[in-house]
Length: 377
Image 1: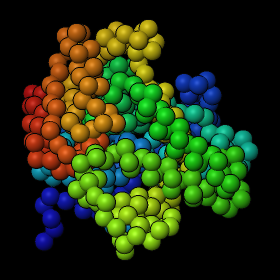
Image 2: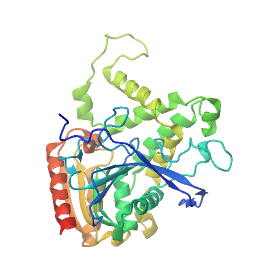
Image 3: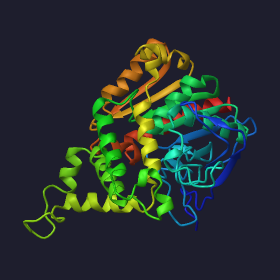
């Protein structure tokens, strides 16, 4: 019998936009595609749509199984009977512009040259992604989302939706995020980028023409990222100082944590595009809605006051600590916005928002119950 809690096999779709798209940088591309998946059914009033925004290395494949049998990156959150219940909501997942999973990005052909964009693809921002997502919403006939939801970089997009298009979103669900990166976070991203751009196979971002991939740089970039996604306690519990085969007195893979990081780096380098990695980390660095308001976050979030918010942080997330979420909550509260906030004592660090924590899932489920009551009223 089919699993009642599974979406089963889902198929992606492609939306094509023929009008030029202007980026925040001022550059344009002539046309572009966005890959997306949908789950559930849009109701007659078109009021039950939820947009799920992805973080750094994820895609539009949010839930269910793709045609290759891969499980969606947030399958524990989205599906029949799950916190975001696809029996009640029409869920949209989209691969962002500049991505490498079907949407137009650096490895696609530039219509002006016939060659891959490579390093010539425009630098993209969170604001650009939200504007492209709004075009996809128009394409799908969705005038207003019941909610926009994401974690980490995905949560920045949810926040930007509430700022830029408050009339088009009822609720924003912001998990494990921040109103802007700290200098330390920008530093981590820069080290990762330098690992890629200094790889001899990078070729100034035009490695496609050489038939190579800057594999070594991608491996190191991913290893750096994984260190920041996990808490020290979880690393100690999973790996400690365990050796694989005793001391070898060399520079090979001796500790279990080394083996884990190298495995993650190797796997990542086989499927993710290096130029896309550069673009996404820059989008993270640039996001700072308060910058246009002289650093005043309350003023930056004033337009979002009519949107309902659920903000969640995790105690062991040292990359985007709870203090950063509390900044968002304080600014929204100062604007008299409707805000629910939870700070969950959980062990796994930044990656906790992706995991099946019972308290976290119960909170999200209860919040969507409230949203369901609104859209059905």
